[in-house]
Image (cartoon, rainbow, N blue to C red):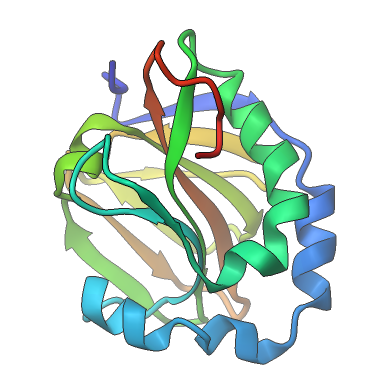
Length: 185
């Protein structure tokens, strides 16, 4: 069952391993899937490292993308912590790291598609700043580094990075299904 609040605080997660792995990546890693990003999110100003992507529904196969080989080892413990916030077993449908540069924004929108409509959209800030505005249904929500939050992505939401620093979130779409035996398919 999806979140009934616009944004729900889930709790703390250990971001140390993924933050360390991210620091070791070359800058080009943020551009490796640019062609894919232009196809799935052509108007987004983010730079994204895609790890996993499921297209076509919750029982469609999940593809490993460029970021998977780069970040798998550090991502798996984080996603197991995220799964622990939900009462039923399930699996990750999509996973990405999204970087929003200083002065950039993501226009107000609602996410759509069979996977996004049925899964829990979880944000984990790795880097943020008090001047980053995350707005859900017109209300600003302050997100803290190292905390997991579930966003009801069927509600209007937007982001503006008014800070001089980049903002990076891990974004995971987690689908609860008691028939699932592995968090990562």
